[in-house]
Image 1 (cartoon, rainbow, N blue to C red):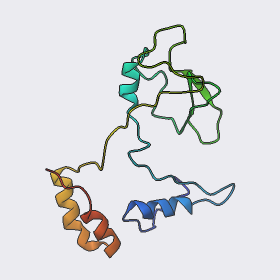
Image 2: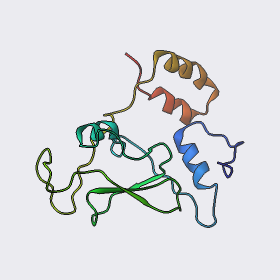
Image 3: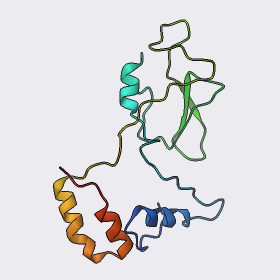
Length: 151
């Protein structure tokens, strides 16, 4: 965070992506991946259904997760972007009963999506954004007007 220009003007997520990508050039620029509901997974429900019942490693400091074909029972994780990888077993051994169809070698059951479609704002937050959008540039006004309105 020390590399981020705190005086930069950012109104929408695309602005933040540009600011973060341009914050560092050496040893390599940051790579920002847009997050949508296709990659946001419900890990709590996943672990509740498995034999583990809860996440076997502290998830708060995790910066990267990796699932390797060579080790289908494990999740590799690390809490820094260039530190060592740790591994944790997250599926039962083949000799135990697995719920659902048996996995083929190298397969991993992905958790279900955490949500479908855009998230809904609270009425108060939506009202505040609609009042404040008049201070934003036209692209930001369009972004805020397109947000899902609360029921």
